[in-house]
Image (cartoon, rainbow over all chains, first blue to last red; front, side):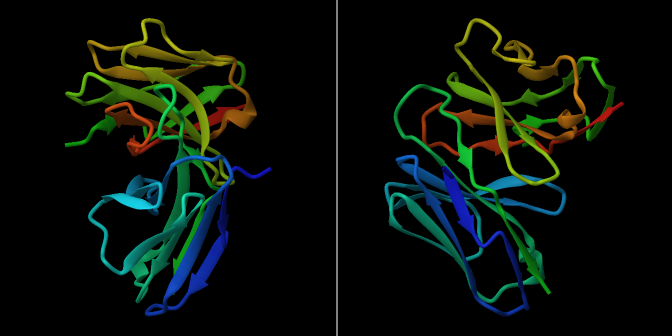
Length: 115
Length: 116
């Protein structure tokens, strides 16, 4: 029973292409996130959605467009891929309400390589 | 300004020994949460332990304990009786305004290697 799933796990593509990464959670959580982990392993928030509504958009190029068709899904579309987009992208989710310190559940990550 | 600082890029520990991974944080929010995650070479992020800013006692989860020193703004992770499977990257993270939907801010991580 996968809690947070991402597809694909690996994505290799040419510069200039457009690609999408899909994320689904079956935990009934209200909030979903996209994090980017760079080549130095640094993890940084990109976007946060609460119940299909965008609530956080860190300084991310507008080539990145998240879409949440429903609260269980958060997809990431990337236009005109650049070499610097190569990274591991993690989807995560957490409940909105509940005890303080609700952990964020992470997906397995998508390793994107732009050639 | 960096909100989470992990000063040890790499650490070595002998199997069965205890090890402390350092983490200091910076926030003016009175309500915050501190988290530790483990990332093995397979890449997944595994939640280890949580400490809330109002918690009076240090958090413990099995072999993991969090040494929370609020005045020093430190939240060190202590792993007792290290095992070879503990070799991984360890990330300290903080959530300000400790509500459910605030994203985590991560440190740069510490790579722990356990030696047989």
